[in-house]
Amino acid sequence: LAYLEGVAKPRGARFNLFLDVETGLGRTGAPLDERGAELYAAIDGSDGARAIGLHVYDGHRREADVTQRQIEVSKLWSRIDSFRAGLA
Image (cartoon, rainbow, N blue to C red; front, side, top):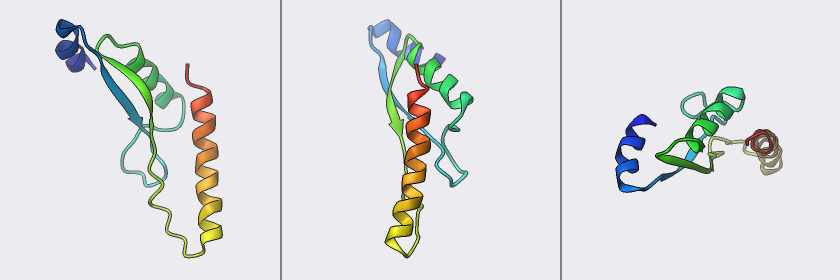
């Protein structure tokens, strides 16, 4: 964030950023807990950036049965909705 502030502030600009969230692959993204919420708040409170939403990838769901896949994706979206509701 300090780097973005250093680039944006002299220009009177702010970067619009999506927060990538961890959806179950364990590879990238902020956790869907207080640490992720704190990062989102830090981005949004920065002089160089503003948080404009979440980036969510559910493409790792590979259940052959479409109904089961829909159930699993719905569970994920329920977690996302709860997380989003807790953001300032």
